[in-house]
Amino acid sequence: MDRAYQEEPVGLEASLRQMINDHNHASAILRERTEKAKKEAIQTATRVSDLLVNAVNEGVQEVFINEKRIEMEIRALTARLMRFKKQTDQWLTVSRAINTAVKEIGDFENWMKIMELDCKSISAAIFNIHQE
Image (cartoon, rainbow, N blue to C red; front, side, top):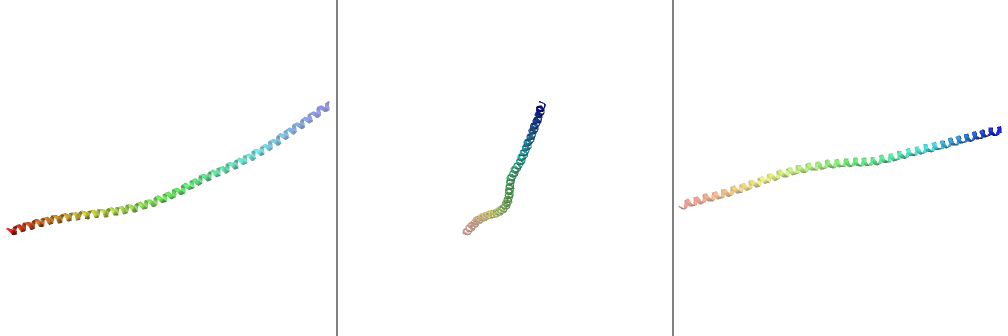
């Protein structure tokens, strides 16, 4: 009976050791799987982050290019506007000069009509004086 009792603890001890070894082995496998999953998650997150940064950068780059194009267009339109303003001012000056000339012609015509009437009046007066 002593032997059975002694063998039993040895068998129990071996079973416990086996269970501890199995547990340690399962824990090691679980740690490896967890570490592998963690590395894959980090790689995936890095890849997603890089894709998002690239997508945002492409949008920012496109906006920057469009902004430069708009600025160039604004400069071109400003220069064009200044040329049109200068040309309009020149046309306005010429138009005022023509208007003044037309007024002067009108004044000259008026003066000519007055002179003609005065000449006719003088001529009629001279004719009347001459007839008497």
